[in-house]
Structures are given as structure tokens and as C-alpha cells.
Image (cartoon, rainbow, N blue to C red; front, side):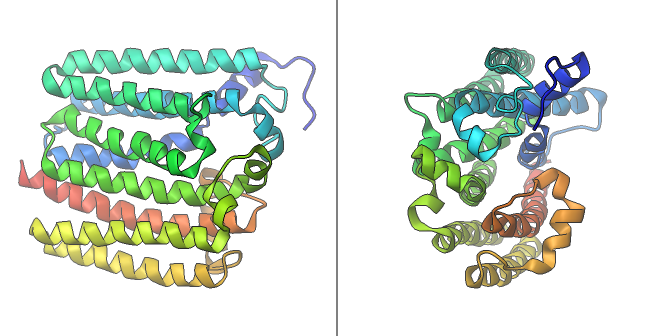
Length: 332
């Protein structure tokens, strides 16, 4: 895309925001909401609403933003192939500006985490600080050499699941109450759901990954088998959530989880039969409904994943929050 020789202030700010990838910020909110609900201790006060906003700011715009920004700094050559319109490869930001973007997001995330930890205090405060620090470290080594966890799906997917699914849930739970055994179970299920989805998200960059020597699941075993591996993980998450609901005495939530599992299985069978064009009846949901949030792709398998992601995320979100809410009510 053509880039002006000198961008105005507004265009620079827009480019910096784009580098932080606002679309990804919302991805941590379901886990944060689940953690808060499982605590059963948040009160409808200005103080608690500000705490909830603060932890979203810490994990969303700052934490997730840092991970996206630092990834762009280290993956410039790959992005020239996979996403040439991103701020740095398109020339709207220099590499130095991109580096400063990630440094500022990093420092603000750490600062906010320390403030929250001191405010909450005790073991819960330590959990919050440890959560954000560990997530930031994982976000860095995910993209940075020499470890560069994203080079292999066996390290990249768990890294994303840990940062987006596990520590965000645990941290939000610690924000308002003691960490219950049920919260650890639910955080673990969020971890595995994130792992399954990041495996499929790699469809969009398969060409660049292959050229760059990155071992994504798609590069190693192909599209259909990649769908199969991810679907097995997703179905196990739903099955374990149903079993937990039963053992905790939440029979109505268990029924909803099982319905979600059946609906997912119906969609999965169609995608396994046709990895490129499966569940095409949901095209309008991607293109006209959630397109601006989920994005679009020229890769057919990735578009199929986006269609599935809408249905799966809605089903899992409803069931995850329902069970988390029941856990919270148990301890109120």
C-alpha cells in the first residue's frame, strides 16, 4: 500500500494503536469475566468496577498489546509475506518506533500490575503480580530469539494458552477473592481452549510459516489433520466441563454444556469433510456480523476456521460463564 512520505500526528497515533492490535484485546475478557464470576465476591461498587477495568487494561491493551507489538518487531520479514499492510512492513512506523511502542506497553503493564498487587495485598496480590509478569515474559520469548516459542506449535500454542487463558482467569479470580479449586479447573479448561484455537489460527500464515521455517501444525500435518487435532482438544474441554458440572452438582449447566458439545460436533463433521468450504452457511456471520472483530483471510481453511470460531466461542463463552457463575454463587 502507498505510504505518504510523512504521516501526520493522527495517522501516527492510529498506526501505533494498530500495532497493539485492538482486535485481540477483547480475547482476554471472557477469561477475566469468568475469573471474576467464579470468585463470587465482586460488589456493584465504583471501586470494584474500577478494579475490573484496571485488570482488563493490564491484560488487554497493555499485556496483549505488548505481545502483538513485540511480535511485529521480531517478525518483520515474515510480515512482509503474511501481513504486508501491518504498520512496520507498510512503512507507517519505523522499526525504532515499533520498539518504543512495545517498551512503553511493557512498562505500563508492569506498573499497573504492581499497583494492583499492592492494593490487593497478601497472597492474592502476589498472584496478580506474578500472573502479569509471567504472561509478559512468555509474550516476549514467544517472538524473540533465541527461544522464539512460535517457531514450533508444540511450544507456541501452550504459550498462548498460558497467557491468554490460564493466568488471566486466575488473576481475575484473585482480584476479588481467594482462589478456589474450581477456579483452577476452569482456568485450565480456558488454557486448553486457547491452545486449540491458536492451532487453527495458524492457517492464515501457513505460506509465510513454511518459507520462514516455522513448524505450525498446518505446515507439519496439513489442514484436515490440523482440524482433527484441534477438534479433539475442544471436545475434551466440553466433556470435562460437563463432568465437572455434574460432580459439582450443577445439573442444568451440565445439560447446556452437553448441548454445546453436540452442536460443535455437527459443525466439526462438516469441516472435516470439507476443510475449505465447510459450514459455508455461516459466511454472513463472518462477513457481515463479526468480520471487523475476527478479521478476514484469503486462505480458505482460515475462513472456514473463522466460521467455526464464531459458533464455538459463543457456545463455550455461555457455558464457561454459566458454570463460573454457579461456582461464585456457591461461595457467596
